[in-house]
Each structure stands twice: as C-alpha cells, then as structure tokens.
Amino acid sequence: MLAHESGTCSGSDLYFHTPSVQTREMLFYMTSCGYYYTDYDYHITRDYVEEFLLFYICDGRLSIRMGDKTIVATEGQICFLNCHLTHEYYTIGHTEFVWIHINGSNIQQLYDHVLDLYGAHVFHSTVAPQIKKDIFDFVYVCRNDQMMPDLEASHRIYRMILTLLSGIPQRKSILTSSKKSHRITDSVVSSAMQFIGNNYRHSISVTDIAQNVGMSKAHFSRIFKKQSGYAPHEYLIQIRLNRAKHLLKTTEMPIKNISQEVGYQDVTTFTSAFTNRVGLSPAQFRNSSLGST
Image 1 (tube, one colour):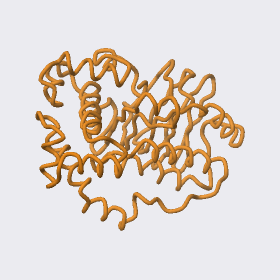
Image 2 (cartoon, rainbow, N blue to C red):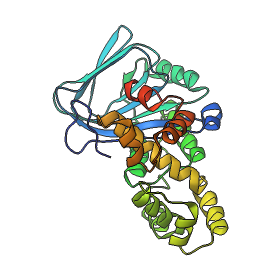
Image 3 (cartoon, helix red, strand yellow):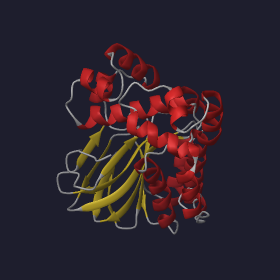
Image 4 (tube, rainbow, N blue to C red):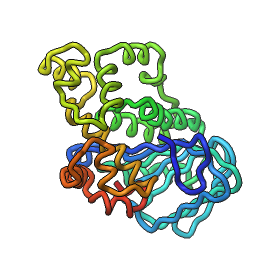
C-alpha cells in the first residue's frame, strides 16, 4: 500500500501486521515494514515505542539519534534501534531505505549482543546485502497481498539477527525463488487469498471463499490452514484490520467510514474486533506512534 507519511515520496509503500496474543507471548514478530523514498521533510521523533527498528540504507543519508548519540547512516549501512529509548531520525536530502519494526521475548538480549559486536546503532557489515534482502522479503510478501505465517516470520526475524551476529550470509530465501512463487500463484490457497483481497470490503463468508475455489467449506478450511498457518476467517479479519490500520494512519477518514470500507457494516463490531486484536481502539491507534502496535 502506498505510504503517505510526511516526507515520503511517490513509490514508497507501508504495511502493517497484527500478531496474535500467542505470537506476542512466544515468538518474534513484525508489526510494520516498508520501503521509503524520502526528501528533506522526512523527520521522526519518538520518546518510546515498545519495539525495535531495523533499517538498510539503499541510497542517500539518514541522521539517526538514539539517546545522546547521533550517527549519519549512509548507503550500504545497517541501523538497529531500540525504540524503548528516545530516538530521532531524519533524511539529509533524498534518501531511500527499507525498514521493519520487530519485537520478541528475548530480542533485547540479542540486540545488546549486536551492539556489543558492532559498537554502535549504525554500522557496516559484510552481511548488509543479506539483511537488505531479508527485510525486503517481508515487504515483498505484503506488497503481493500475501501473509507470512507467524512461525515462519518468527524464524526469519531470529535468523536475520543471528546473521548480524555471525556475519555469515544466509541461504537463498525460499519465498523469493521463482519456483516457490510459481507454486504459490497456482495454488488453491493463492486463489483464495486473491479472492479475499478483492472482496474483503464486502460481507463474505468462508463458505463464499470455498465455493469460489470449488471446494467444500470443511476441506478448503483444512487446506488453507495447513498451507497458510491461518484459519480462513482469521486471515480475512487480519486483512481487514491491516487495511484499517493503514487508513487510520494515512487518512482522516472517519472511523465509521473506515469500518465500512474494510467490510464491517457495524462500527461497534469493528471497534470490538480491532481493540481485541490490536490492544488499542481505532482512535487510540490513530493517535499512537507508528510501530507501537
């Protein structure tokens, strides 16, 4: 989805993910990611966000302050921020970077090891190209209206941090290989995801989705759950909530209209579903710092 944050330029995109309560308690997870083209107006200041932020600078320069230490990141460098601390970053001219907000139960300890190894929150690394690719994998999946199962996402995030610690490039990503992409595109699950992506604004049911791919509801639900990691209804809710997050952050559309835009005819039902899964009401999320959920 196109990003509309102040300072972002045409071609930038931004995506959200809403992890389950169980995922938050047990796994590593991503809450947002994006690929930004920015100009002089891009400037972020936060006092506290309960997450960590990983950048790769593709082109240009980004001034990054964490605590009382400021470093200018340049092309090819990695930035790893503990967003629990006061932090600020802004572009110095036109800058292009890929980024991801992550969290997990023991990520603080891993983060400390990374900073001990590199000595700062901005650094060069022999594995920088691999980190760029790993972050972009998340953006790529979101950009193609797919959803990475939480277990796989957790594994990829953990592996990405270990790559920083070991300096050893990872093996070729399974998701980005053309063979895997071809299998996903031609699968029943891919067709169902496309149907959901095209129709989540309407009142659709699991039965409707199953009929669209020519299967019984029970058989389809088993296949979808096995291959995607999500029950069909849960996947539909995730798509709706992720779209709602984007609209809340990038437009001034009234919450009642957003609820209808993402397939909820009743704003109370939408607010309840959003609050139960995100931990904030739609209004609270709209006013929160990007990356706080």
